[in-house]
Amino acid sequence: MDVVVAGQGYVGLPLAVRAAEVGHRVVGYDVDPHRIKRLIAGESYVQDVTSSRVRAVLDSGAYAATTDAAALAGFDIAVITVPTPLRDGVPDLTYIEACARTLGAHLRRGATVVLESTSYPGTTEELLVPILETTSGLRGGVDFLAGFSPERIAPGNKRWSFAGTPKLVSGIDAASLDAIKGFYDGIFETTVPVSGTRVAEMAKLIENVFRFVNVCLVNEMATLAAGLGVNIWEAIDAAATKPFGFTRFTPGPGVGGHCLPVDPLFLSWKVQQELGVPFRFVELANDVNRHMPHYVVRRLTTALDRRHKPVSGSRILLLGLTYKINATDLRESPSARVAELLIDLGAEVRGADPNIPEVDRNQLKVPLVDASAQEIAAADAVVLLMDHARFDLPTIENNAPYVLDCRNRLSGPNVETL
Ligand code: SAJ
Image (cartoon, rainbow, N blue to C red; front, side, top):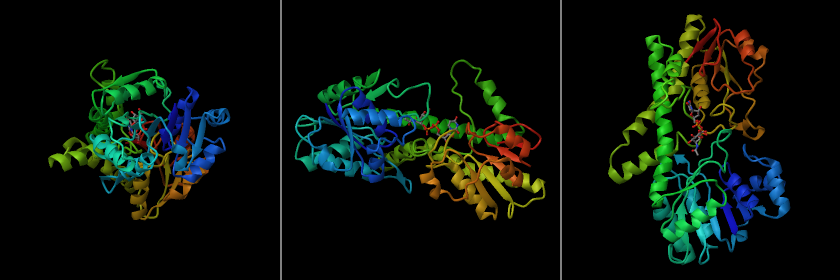
């Protein structure tokens, strides 16, 4: 089929390349000319898609990358994989709206449009379909098909491959579900049909609310355990020996990324709008999450005080600035807030992270240095925020005068864990 994947980021590019590999004619559409230029040059910027795979589908003619909306004409199925960020705590659906208008202008009878971007229940049928109808003059369910199928991309996850991860599928009606299931059956090993788009939209949010609330729970427990003089890390490992009814999460400096700290707030916003009541678990988790960087700084301040070193004027080295271990993404990373708080206290803050792409280094609030023995030894304190595999842990243990280890990876007389 003629397939359009609108949005060629960490969700859209894997889908577009996979669809091309299984035999579809795929147009990878994005409004970012820099991205498209790199794709046309056969370069992947997505962690789990190799450049050789991009080059192979480009060379076979199965895949083309473009910013030109005219190239979308005549698609059989279009998949929307654009960002859904929050703007001051409010869902920003402008990317979906713009994409829907673009696709609507090229929508023809019999075609299908699928939304993959995470959003609150009702987005597909209350926002996407009406825009498609208005811009095309066609009617959803009559002239064109539509549905929702949440993305389940887990960057760097070695256990679950893209195609091996079960894929939820839904439609605005039975014909839409059939068409959408048929498309994804050719790409994923397992598809899971559900009765409607709102169920699929809610299922996705349940997945990430579950994870967000539970990580924030262990983070709050870490702050309490420290006060009680209990090693939270050992206690969690002990709890994890329970073979049923328990899922292991580990504390950290805060929950970052473009999924967990964002998706749940889509649901809490919708609940407040529609029902006029708070989604208390999400609001509490969000409050805990907002305070974790403050807690990290408080622990560091206390440790420096004990060493008669005021934070102000101290040289502090933050190790691991991206949002999770071995990730390259800085979005919503707690390191930014930790750095801000320390700078406000007058500290001289530096950061080390070998995973940050050159193109993203201008976003940093601190100078980037190597995690060398010299840098580590020259700091008054080191904070291990993300235990990237590329860090040499013995170098940190042997050279840091003091380390606040937020990941329980270090040991030694100069090490404290969160
Ligand atoms: N985190 C902890 N402790 C944990 C787990 C996570 O502090 O026990 C922190 C991470 O450091 C990071 C944040 O939470 O700052 C998010 O981590 P994540 O492992 O959830 O990674 P993400 O944001 O890439 O989440 C994605 C999600 N995938 C989708 O939304 C499709 C999530 O649902 C997946 O469970 C997760 O990948 C995964 O398992 O890899």
